[in-house]
Image (tube, rainbow, N blue to C red; front, side, top):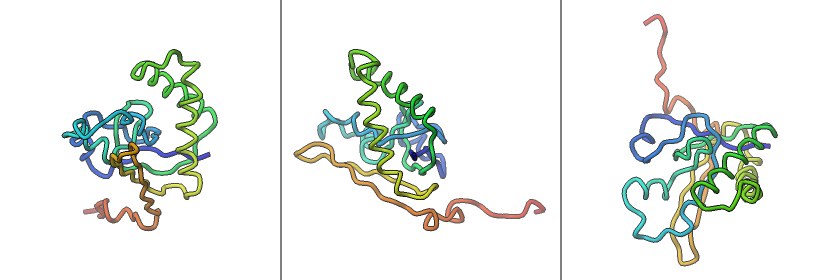
Length: 159
């Protein structure tokens, strides 16, 4: 099974999101946060989180890029618990036990998105409000298209 981890190429996420996901933490789309939003809610950092932010499962922070990676069944079980706790704490789910199936569905949706891609494939989410609700689209950046030379500074250790 595959999911996606938060990845940062620079410090911009710490400036554009109220709470930035930690590099390496597992993420899901997190569109559930916006299910009752309207245009009035789309302002400042909240608008950025809505428009392009993946949801970090440990920090509840947002990140712009995620990278596909293999995940163990033990990790998935732990992540289900974290997300179920989040649903109880922030969305009024009646209990963790009742929230687990919903958390599992969120993780499975993310796995379905990731499973067909090679490890290190980058994913970007884009959202818009429509009359039918929140519409999410995903952009896939293959590892060979996302060469690190675009982001990294290369040099010699001898210099």
